Structure formats: structure tokens, C-alpha cells
Image (cartoon, rainbow, N blue to C red; front, side):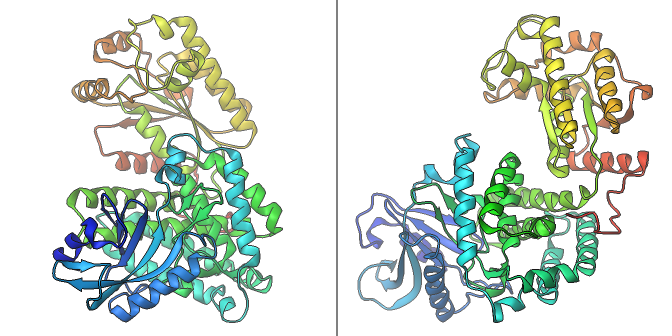
Length: 535
């Protein structure tokens, strides 16, 4: 597709119905031209091995397949396949010129009802998630099965898909994927596959290999009435003919990716209730790893697309890296014992970044003093306080109440069998000892992350934070030395102490922390020799 093709289809007069504007969006495989009321999707002439749209006949065929398959879950949206024609002004969807390509025509869905957007805005309820689970469960119960479809549930076919992924993502090592992460993921997958032959065969014999959707993630769900799940896999049957556990794993993985894993239990409860599937939980983490790797690969493919801007490529690389880290995280957390972790450090030292990144990778619950403090005071999270040091919501009494509430939340998590990371300054030894006692009472490891960095970097961070209107923390440079004077450094006698200098890259620090945790108590993280701990 040349520039003239793209530019001509961004003109309103290229469309058969009146529109005031045309907006172009791109994926690794398609151009989407969004008009006032419709979306026209043109496939890029690409060949990624697993997807081949290089000829006009292939693009026409897969456009028709896309309409046919997506009408299963979103029947009113997919209107049909239309011709892209040649004109004196360039490409157009009007007139009787030579057919030069094809497009899928869809009704435009309301962007404000897209699930990823509503989740980010905090507007999704448990009832919404139950509805999604119910729709997917009913779809799976009625999806085609048997015959050729069963072949794709066999371990040989699953292994083929994994080998293709490993082969294709090798080229991203050093850009969006760390070499060690690839080693960790591959080793665990190979072990799981070797130990799970009987499980895969059981899923085939029990009829759980179906003609699924193949691409159920947050961006492909619109909370309209009725619910619309769109953009399934049409370009390769072996990605759609899969275990129903693999289909829902995509959705659950994406909840984890967007820090919305609290909805997972609601989804699983409803899905299990409708399907009566007794065994999908044993494969869920395996397929979550698979789906995270797929998303990392898809985002990484954008790095080689000449039609995508440098800014979008940076965004794609960062997003891909996060997906690959999540895939590794699923592996690292297998069989990991529950634990209690607290941060300890001055304002601006980088505590929240460390706590959030580790919680994301290891699937741990996190509580933050900044959030708890404002919650107790009934203050909006993004309302910045300008109180003097030790006043307002930072008085000794309010500090006590904040740490007491975080202790309660940590206790609830540990009793429920979940690990907890507490993101706070913990400048007083007495506060740290309270959490140490809680860990001892629950017989779990207790880690103290002593976080620091050069003061010059602290000032840069706090100055930048002061200009961010959505910043949660109230820390300011003019308060830094007051806090420093009162800070009581932690000692090794208080718990397993890990010192972290956040002037280093974030992921380097996370890897260093995990290695130190591994060596401190023999917890196996990077050398998963067995997959037997997987659910």
C-alpha cells in the first residue's frame, strides 16, 4: 500500500455514505479507516509466516472469513466485504473503477463503551464481567468441535505453535525481549509440555477443543447491548481451533496486564458455572504464558512496519516488553510461597516503581500508603496536598492510622493465601517491626527493600512529580530533608534486607531483586526444573 492509496482513503469523498471525517488506525496486519458511522478494514499485504495476505485473492478470501466468523459473536456489526476501486483521485469505495483490493465493512462501535477504556476509567462492574463470562461460556458450549478440530488440541500441534513462536521472537531479543526471559519461558514450557501429555489428551477426549474466537482481549470487547466481542482470528485455523481454556486465558491474561486481575475470580466463577468444565484451571497458567508471548510478538512486529511512526514504535516496543515480562512472571510465580514485602526509603527514591513492577511480575497484591492515606481522609487520589511537613494528613496520628490500615490489609491477604507488597516510606523502625511480627505470625518470609538513589535524581523526580496533575504522591523537594532527618535506616535483624539503587534501569533492579530473593532462602525462580507446581 503506497502513500497515495492511504491518503486517498482518508478523504471523505472516497466513501459511499456522507462522513465529516476519516481517521486512520493501524495494526501489524491492517489499516482501519474510521468514518462517522462505519469502519473499513483493509488487510496489509504482509506475510508473517502464520499469516499471509500477500495477494489480492488471499485478502478477499480472508475478508470473507472475517465476516463469517465474527458474525458468531457480533452478528449485527459485520456488514460484509466491499471492493476498493481505482479512480483518478486514487483508491475509493465508490464508482465502477478497477477493483484493486477488498475491505471488511463494519458498523462503528461506540468507543466510549470499549472494555479497555471503561476499565481504565473504573466504570466496569462485577456484573459486566459476569455477562462477558456468560457470553463466552455459551459460545464455547455451542462452538463446532470434533474431526479435524481435535487434531489441534494434541500436544504435537501445541508444540508446533510454541516452536513457531520461539523461532519468531528470537529476532526481538535485545529490543523488546531479554535473552534471559526467553530462556526462562522456553525451559518452563518445554518441561510443562513433557509432563502434561496425558492432560492434553484428556482435554481432546473430553471435547474441549473447539472452533473458538482466538483473540479475546480487552480491546476486542464492547459493552453494548447486546455485548459485542469482535475481531476474532480468521487468518489461521490452528490459532482458532484450540482448547477453550486457551481462549479464556487471553482475556484473563489481559486483565492481569492492565492490573485488573481482581475481576478474574468473578469471570472464572461464572464461566465454570455455565460450562461445567472440570479441568481448565490446570491449563490456565500455561495458556496465559502462551497468550502473553503472542501479544508480545504482535506488538514487536510493529517495529518493522514502515507505515508506523517512530513514536508508535517506541510505544509498541514498551508494550511488547511488558507482555514478555508478564509471560516470564507467570513462570516465576509457579510454586512461589506467599510472602510479605515492604519498601523502605525516602520520598522520590523510586519505591512505587519497584513495588508496582514486582507486583506485576509476580502477581502479588499491593497496598500503597499514598493511596490508603487519601482513602482514609476521603480525598481524591489525584488531589495533591500542599500541607507543611507533619501537618494535615501527615500528622503522627494520621501516620499511625495509615500504617494500621495497611497492616490490616496485609493480614487479610496473608490469611487468604496471597502475598502482599506494602509501598510506603517505613521511616520508623517500630512500623517495620509491626509488619515483621505479622510475617512471623503467619510463618512467611519477610523482605525489606531498602530503596535509595542520589539526591540529585530525587530532586529531578520530585520536581517532575510536582508538574503532574494526576500524581498520587504529595512528596515535594522542600520536605525532603525534614523526612531524611527522621529516617531510621533498616538493619538486617529486622528481616531479609535487600538494598536497591534506583538510578539503575528499573528492570535491571527487578532482576537483581529476584536473584537476591532466590539466593537468600533457596526459593527457585529462574531455574524452574519442573512444571509440576503449575495448577
